Length: 353
Image (cartoon, rainbow, N blue to C red; front, side, top):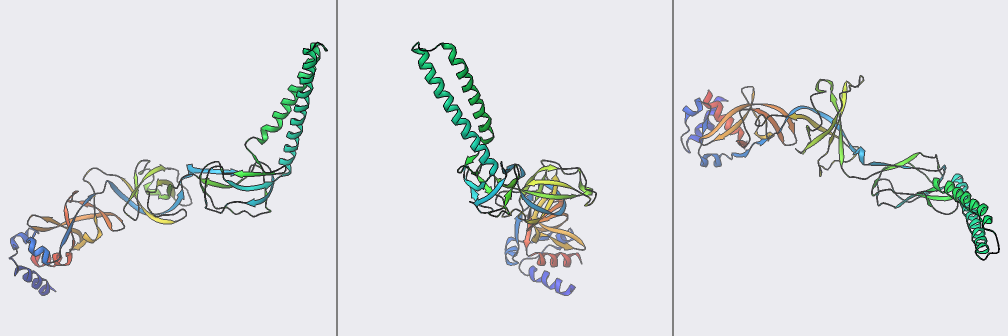
């Protein structure tokens, strides 16, 4: 193995002599031409901004504050379903039709009260004409006015419970969408009985998503609202709330965080997230996972300098898809090798030996 490593190092030296004095100080001296011929490419390290604490599973849920319940005002039977589960809907769109005996009774009572009000108004109007013409005393208007007031009160009594309900005939009414959004999944069938004031489904008025995370007991209290969690695509979401109440069964507490727009995640989906907390500037950086290599039992990256590459020991504190968060003598903007690491490792080991 040592012979092979020395052969590789010597083959590079044939291009331009490598400074073994530099190797002694762990810097591999290479010219730009040698770097190109060896297929070594570099990329700049990025600021991590956050310190990774744990990689845990999470469930994607709709934003709870965007949920609007759809309730049934009167007991009845579902006679028609106008929408499909998860369908996009507009405010005022008809969702369901319900036939209800209670609604019919209230409707009949309202119609009767309106009829009585109309009759008392006609009687008052006719008597007022007689009084105006001097054919009747003005005191005869008092009981008629009282009848009108009683009829108005009766109309108000019957109309108040029906306010906001969209009638579909004498015995049926519509349930309409209060806002635009996406209707939640529901399990309803035509002919099904529905209870008064029961929620039959809900509307999500926003497409935004949250991640629901069970935080391990040892991390409870270390993460708070405003901190971040990382997703598989390298994006970060802000923590909305972080409970400190530990469930004795799961030994964890609930954390809720925003899911970045365009994540490609869907409600109900399970994923992995990285729980993080804010770190000091320059304390952590993110590098491609292809920049990580093991040297002498330690994790390293090859840092590019004006004279070549130097292996730098780092600690990997977290991983997301394609990237690793590391701590060590690497700062934001440093150039690290992402290809040709095998060749650099061989030359490093040859120089060390």
